[in-house]
Image (cartoon, rainbow, N blue to C red; front, side):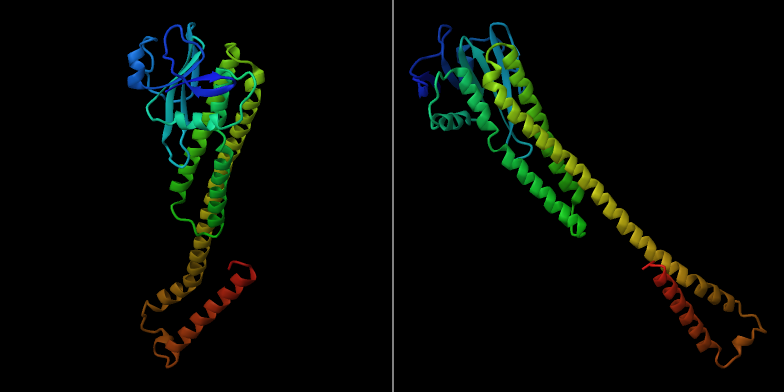
Length: 293
């Protein structure tokens, strides 16, 4: 589809893209773009991140936008600032929906293609703060489960969230580089993209804080594991300490020498049980006084 800006509004255009066209916003599929053949070797590389480059006659870039709640899926497209036109080449038809959202906003004075591109970048990050807050809530819920020892598959969960946060952190870094390049190339001015850069910077800072939170949560989990292991070792130590004298006595009387008087004593067997019970009680009292359990 092809749009143009008239009276500070975006409207559908009946014009076709040519070498002499100006002021058009074009959205093409890869097949449609191949028919135009205006730029050689365009839209060939695999899109991995957001960037923009100066090719002298035109500005060329890619957008790789993480799709929320669908990790690791991304929405990707190419774009060109060519002869004062803005051209998008996409595999999935998503841009028309975003443009409709821009159209439904109130008109602006002196609206240009550059300002449209700014509005498009604003829309793709508009819900990001809410999404990061949801990730923080997931981490808080996970933290509560860790403290209560009710968490299952902790490592799998935390690694997935950590990768998602890292993906958005790199994404914001790429957007900051993209806007800086736009400003340096004189396509736009800092006045247009300054506020946007500040907003992306705050989102990146939020993602960085969440990344640090995941590290703290991993440390907490490891501490809980260590405490649990210490409790287990404490129990094993207490059991070993109690049974050590019992084992000694059992081994002593297991020698069965002929002249051991306790072997023929009528009350020898129950007396050993009484001694065992006293040893256990004394050990438990000592452990309790020293707060071993």
